[in-house]
Image 1 (cartoon, rainbow, N blue to C red):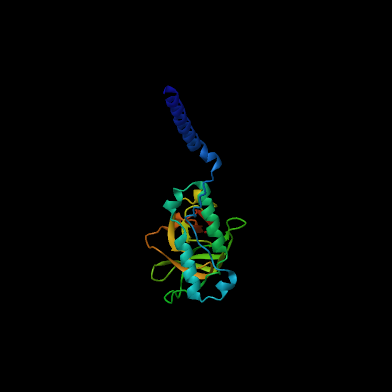
Image 2: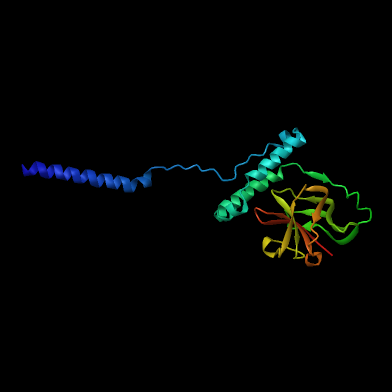
Length: 224
């Protein structure tokens, strides 16, 4: 009678040990497939498709690209490798977008504008390039205006116009204090940006075209 009980007990032990062993060892021989999407998922239409679109349709694509980029706070919480992957994808998408050309006229009231500061846009690096003039005008009514002329800069996502204290910043670390004058209207052409009456222009030494989500300087115009 005892022998069958011993056999049964032995079988139970083998089953338990085998089950535990399978559970612990299974990750070694079972695939566990994961297919997570990046937080940034955006596919830009091809060049031929973009060229056939109306201006309004291209602007819709441009707006969708901007909306797909996580905000600065979300990006800051991501691992560095994930941030870099999103940055690369966003830059590649922006690079194939057509240029956005602006032709803002000088305000009609500005019959005798006075240039108080100006500078020539220059490249931030071999990839992020800019050219043209930045001019700060004081208008007859006392208002101030920043104007770009013959302007062109590498296309990029979420580009902003900054008025910065550093005369030649090459990265986000050396911008110094700055005022954000708003989103860049277009990467090509003449355009105007208002400067508040409370801004002390003597404290600012450059205009910077800056990608806010990824903290990248695209072009700088030192002012004098």
